[in-house]
Image 1 (tube, rainbow, N blue to C red):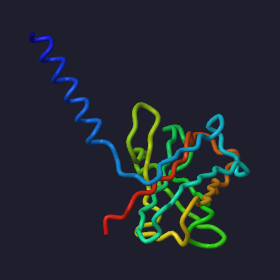
Image 2 (cartoon, rainbow, N blue to C red; image 1 turned 180 degrees about the vertical axis):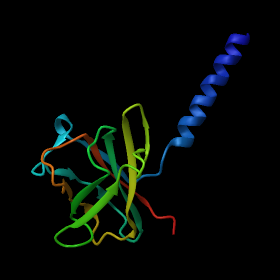
Image 3 (cartoon, one colour; image 1 turned 120 degrees about the vertical axis):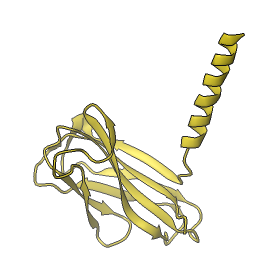
Length: 155
């Protein structure tokens, strides 16, 4: 009886944690960087489908990286959204003391950076977004994945 009660409590707490951690994202996609060495010729493509252009959206760029990454930041070029022909975005990965930003375990970390807040898409349907790395080192080692997260604005 006690084992069943403990098992039931563990199952309930796991389910509760899973439900409470679920998000209300419109789009969430990560693209892997081949062999964790990102060439500036390797373009990562994303195709979110936006149905409601009357809503405002918050867009985040997410970087999964290794603690051994050589630089304190990552510069990206993002095509297909705000500015033409692209936006140049800096994402800080390490603090001045060398501590990584974001969440992680051992030597792998993920940082989410706000890119556009309250963004209104100009047309509905499938959007085309492309990202390339814009660092001086090529290929760039230590970047594992790049993601785009789009969620409805809370405004």
